Each structure stands twice: as structure tokens, then as C-alpha cells.
Length: 455
Image 1 (cartoon, rainbow, N blue to C red):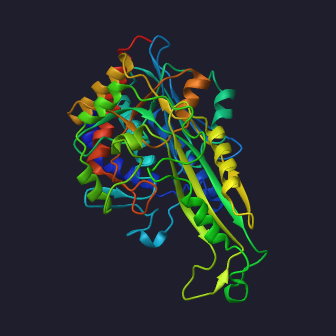
Image 2 (cartoon, rainbow, N blue to C red; image 1 turned 180 degrees about the vertical axis):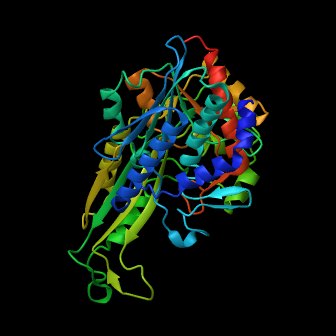
Image 3 (tube, helix red, strand yellow; image 1 turned 60 degrees about the vertical axis):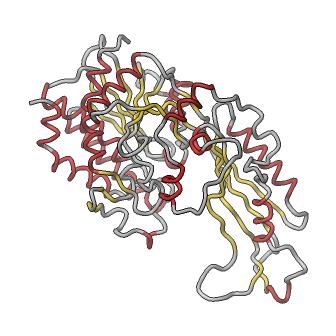
């Protein structure tokens, strides 16, 4: 029996196991779910042990790292697989058609929080490796898994774990599946990611909520001030208006921009899929360039005053907004956050007080676009999908990829099985069943292709 035949035979079992994995409310950002996060880590450890891996839970100052190893021969390449078992908060819950942690199968998709990001994608490799072990009794490479529980809160404790355990994590190449295909008919290898610098701005006015009739007109409304400040963060051409924001950016190579133009992208279809009346962004760049090779600043949420049913005429005591800046390589997250803070202090009305909380970020990264490792990944994807992949970049961020290079000296293969309409970070997150199956087949083909590379 081949690995592909084993996958076919165990399709129902794999589906049931994925649904179990997705049922854990492993929301790392919310302390009320700490026990759920821990239970998910325990389940994952037990599952990897059952397959044949030597596994261990490594505590951090936050959530544990699940480490697993399958050692065959020191002469073989060692591959470090990375994934995360934590998920984004599911709110707003009323927009889910089915509960986020009661996985549902409909219309050819798995629906659940974490279905794509990143439980489903991580599971494809686990199942692919299992298929090889069960049909051959071993693996053609040495495998290590590092699956963390804090990716959705910026992997704050992972760098310290990696520094402390360099010998444990020693490998020849890293594999990450937390990205997407180009579209539903075009698989891809990703060779670049944007970085991220998150922050939260608070604007303070009166020492309490006050009556808008009795006090309105005599003090600055923090909600009004916040909106005025946010409106000044971009200029009329869509550029971020923070002084020095673009200072460290190097122009994208000409070959890169030429390659993007060859990809089967349609602005009209993209616009229609999002339901927006028009596309927008930084002047002088295409849609793909705007989301892949240009930095951005976005407000992710605004909070202020009364938001319940009916009217309540107050001037709120404060207003706040969450901000993320997506960065391209050579931009430093801390430096950019400091520039944002300086600019906000400059434009804030003198009649309010402001505070900017800056959070842990990550740098953008480019991975090598040539060499035997990438060729091996492309061959595996072709075997799993029946089609040669294209090469693309992603607008999202995986800060640990930079850490792999800086702390462990490892390059990373970014092999994504998701689709851009899988509702990642949104209600009704989903993972196409056909993509899960092709991902498992790719996961079963990849070790053999990587074993051909001389480490």
C-alpha cells in the first residue's frame, strides 16, 4: 500500500480527528480559555505520540510548545516543521452560522475557528507523515515538530524558547504551512511575508462620561479627536503620512514585479469577491504589489462611548483604537512604532491626553527563491495537487520565520494550502475539504523529495 492509498483508506478517520482538533477553544488571547489551550496541547501531544513520534510539552511563560521528534539516521536531512495550535478569538459570535468550536461540514468545507489558521494546515503534514510511517515503517528524513500556542498573540515567548533549545531544534530546513494558494486552481510556494507592528491608541478626555448637552462644546470629545487623528494617518494618495515611515524600504526587484504581472489575477474578480464598490490603496502600485511588497497602516477596531440599544447622550471619557502596521523587509517594528507614537503626539489636540501601547512585532522576510530545497517543495506540491505551483508573496505575517533565520540559521519553505476566501480571522472560518486532502498528499510526498537534497 502506498502513502496515497493509505490516505484514501483513512479519509473518514482523518476527518474525525481533524474535527476533534478543531473542537478545542484554544484562544490564546483570552485568559478564560487557558484551560482549553492546555487541553488542546495535551491532545496534540497524545496524537503525535500515537503516530510514533517522541513527544514533549515545553512550558513557557505563556502557553506550552508541543515538540515531537522522529529520528531515523544522522546521515539524512532533518526537517523542522512549525505550526500553531492556538487560534484567533471567534467574536462576533452572532455572525457564525454554526458555533466556532463545534466543527461543521457543509458545502465542501470544514467550518470552525482554526480550520485553516493553522490547525487544518498543520494537520496535513502530521497526516502525511503518518501515511508514510504506516506504509513503510519509517521516514526518509528526520523530522521535528515545533507547534506553539501563542502565534496569534505574536509568539512573545517563542524566541526565548528557541534560544534556550538551539540543539533540540537543530535542523537543515524548516517547513511552515500557514499561508495560502494563489487561487482555487493554482497552488503556490510563498517566498515573502510582510512583518507587523501592532499598537493600541488611547485618547483621554474628561475624568468620566459627561452629559453631551451640559458639557458639549466646552471640551474636546475623545471620540471626535480619535477620528480626526486617524484621518491624518494617510495622505490623499494612500501613503502613510508618518514622517520617516518609508525611510528603510528598498525598491522591489524588477523581476519580482514582472512576475506578479504574469499571475492570473483579476482586479474585477477581487473587487467582486469582497463586495466593495471600488479598490483603493497606495497610488502607483498594483493590487498584488500593495498587499505583498508595500507597507500599510490599518485601524483594526475602534471603541468609545455608549454602543448599546437606543440613545444615550454622553461625551465619553475616552476613545481607543487598535492599529497594525504591516511592514516589508528592512523595516524595524520597534522603530516604526516609535515613529507612530511621535506623530500621534504631534497631531493630538492639546485638550486631550493620549497613550500608545506598543506590542511585540515581527520583521518582514524574503526566503530564497532558488536552490534544491525549493525545487523539492515544488515537486511535492505538484505530486499532491497535480499541478506545478507558482511563486508568490503574502501580505500576512509569520514573525517566527525571521527568528528561524536569526536564531537557528534556518531557511524556511512556505507551503500554503489555504484560500484567500477561507475567512481567516473572521466569522465562519473554513478549509476546503479538497485542499485538506491535497495538502495531506503533499505532506506525504514532501519527505521523499526533501530526502534527495544533500544537507
